[in-house]
Image 1 (cartoon, rainbow, N blue to C red):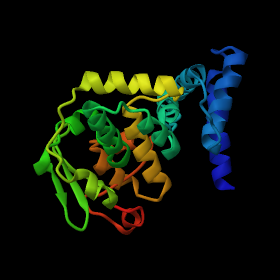
Image 2: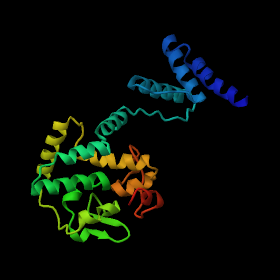
Image 3: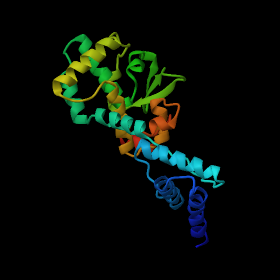
Image 4: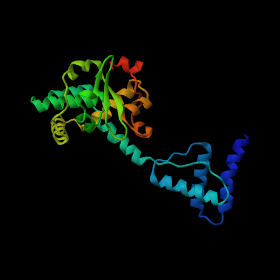
Length: 246
C-alpha cells in the first residue's frame, strides 16, 4: 500500500507542478505515461509514443520528480528480425536447392559450400578460405575458421566425414557462388540468400536447445545481442550437439 501511495504521488505531483503551464491534453497524456511507468504497464509500439515518453520523463525531471526508466523503441530491430526470419529455410528446401545445383566440377564445389554453411553456420568468405589443414576429424569434425576479428572453432555433423575426405580447398569465387545460388532459389521460388543458410543454422540450433552463448561462439559474434536474433554456443561439443550428430 505504501508503494501505491508513492506511485500515485509522483504523477499527481507532476499534474500539480504543470497544471498552469501545460495544456490539459498534454498534461493528461504525460501524467498517464508516468503512471503507466510506475505500474510497469507502459508499452512503446511507435516512434511517437517513444518521443512522448522521453518528453514526459524530461519534464518530470525538471519538476524534481525522478523517473527511473529508460524508454526503448526497437522498430529497426524488429525489421531486422523479420528480414532474418524471411530467409530461414527448412531441410526440405535445402534438399531442393542441392538437387538443382549444376552437375559440373564447379557445381560440386558449390554444393559442398552450401552444405557447409547450412550445417556449420560459416559465412561465405570463411568457407571459401578453408583449406585442408583447417579441418580436424577425430571424435568430432572441427573447423578452424579465420573470420572477422579473432579465429574460432566451428563444427560439422559426423556424417560429413566422407564428404571432407580429400578436401583441398575451394577454387570457386564469391561472385560465382552468389550468382549461381540466386539463380537456383529464384527458380525454386525460395526467398533466401546464401547468407540465409547461416541464419538457418543458428535458428535450427536454437530450436534444438543449444545455448545462446554457444551459438554466439559458433557464429563468431563479438556481441551477444547480435546472436539474440537467433541463438548460443561453445568451442566444445556438448551433449545437445552430440544428440544432433555433431
